[in-house]
Image (tube, rainbow, N blue to C red):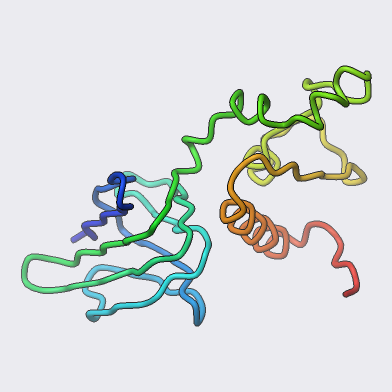
Length: 171
């Protein structure tokens, strides 16, 4: 059996479909939902929803909080995520982000930046931004909503710690 998952905002249904696992960040920590999970209602923290598809592979939806509701019965397990804002990581428009990056456009005009050396944070985290060296510095330029920045930063930190990448700076 699989999970029936629905991720919605007041404006639209962000994603719905079948999944084998959903991992979300509640205000009291992470929770993993599998088929047959006990009924549950939690308040979500700002962060990623990681969803494992039935066909294999994972994808991420960034949610700005909200609620996660789980029901289970003879008809299966349903997970409803209700957020005031959410976006699939794959829907981020890189070209639109470049147009909004005013200070980076100035650096480009002054010859201090080459867009050929700029990679999306998604590619850096996934390890698909080729040609990077361990000594390279990663700069994060925010061009979205603050809520997306917080969720992205939390995800990057989590992945870096899990991979033993980077160096923890003192407080």
